[in-house]
Image: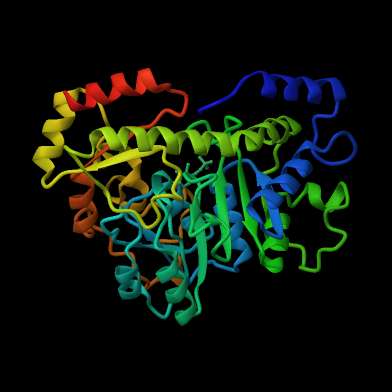
Length: 384
Ligand SMILES: *Cc1c(COP(=O)(O)O)cnc(C)c1O
């Protein structure tokens, strides 16, 4: 959460005064308006606002027709939700290495493709753009879907295009820890009509059939889905947050550039696939050894080593590593007949490059709200 205040208070007041807290029928239609404004901003044909980023990933996978019998490639370094979105649709996550940019390694992705693979999920972790040129080419060559997990990269770009809009579909998160937020929230964006229609049906399978006019132009067959609908509060807050997105990203870039300039004599930085396009929420320092990274972190008594951030590293994805894909055994993708013979040989040391790279990185969080004096003090602290 970077910036929230009077505008969001006014937006919530607007919703309460309208007495229309439900997204469908009447009122301002805040959620609908947010979807329109998000589409216009990022330049996709369709957007569906929902309860979370993970809900958007799951709805996209459903929209792609992915399920039991399918493998989906995910990076070894991502929040566990990416992998669980795959098991949620009954498919098997296949874990691939990261490269020196700390994002999905296209070479390892190619090695992990099998006759069962249906999709690749590149994750723009910390707002660092993946190598989408290579990943798009690989997906095309093998006839696979590309689903961008842009949950940590709201507002980020790759070669001038918004992250989340380059693959067949993209997922944004608006939970408390993301670039813009409504506490919780997410969105699926796509230019693919069938993915949109099935995502729409899946995310709101009960209400959509009975309320409003969302289904009027939908051609896809109806099926039973789930309930990822949000209230007008979420829509109203996100409309205000979206207006702030550019200035948040601009100030993050300004402040990261200032810090980087001060620190560049002493440190190396992590390579990027698009340094100008990334979200600049993080200045990532790069050390020759893990010992040096640990020593520096101790020395400043701050910073974060990504290897230690809990459920972001595959070896800590306990339910995946232990293959507990669901409470009910018949719903557990790891036990399903259709998935036997698929690649689910997980081991804590299966992606050594990921563990090695992450052990040598230290993240310095960038605050878009710091002024020059505060940045100077911060740089002094980091250089001590
Ligand atoms: C936050 C996050 C998600 C899930 O987003 P929620 O809104 O919390 O469901 C998925 N993938 C990544 C990489 C994330 O950081």
